[in-house]
Length: 291
Image (cartoon, rainbow, N blue to C red; front, side):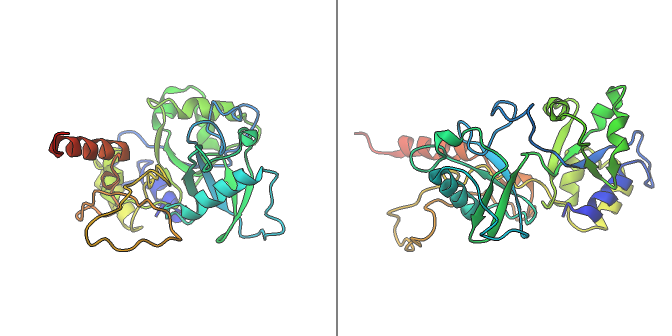
């Protein structure tokens, strides 16, 4: 799991302090203190929780708040939509929760709340706070640091694999470099899980056995769960022979996975839901009787 101890081990191992020795060090950090400011709250640079389309947003638990202190100024329909999305999410990360809101019909936010952010939502599990969508994401900054003449500023505020983004830096700087995939690679999230060799393959770390050993000593490494949808991200089942009666208290969708038993937790287990639906519909049309 990607947490402080694992990130510290990853930080040390990928700086070249291993048996085989990396030709070039790697700079892989979880980014904390990412925040909303005037440069990224127009629903263009990043998605806001109630923004246009089907926005993806990130939330953290606020165990220090109660129902009396976990309040917001949202329209009632917006609060209910976000509460439902948080409670029905299949994100298993205990530190963060990513949700996707379906802004259609009565399932989405009130248009009046389109530019709202950093709100608190009380759920049956407790209070959740909306945070920057990359808060505690894990990034590989190696190419950026190698190519940017002043990139060593990143190293200056990194402690044991967690980068605390400085409060005196505008978020526009981070938003600009994070979307340049030739410079920055998004790896995972704090609290996610991944099998070591999958992570090493993703970041080309498997050239150094010393790195693999250092990571394996810490158990499993997490990878982003790739939660794409709460509703619509699965298959609606009805009228099947011998179907088990559904629970009316639950949503009518369930996630579809292509399970690889030899690679439990691997990124490859999570398939493209839209492509799955296209395949099912195409096969139905091909095999259906002529009208």
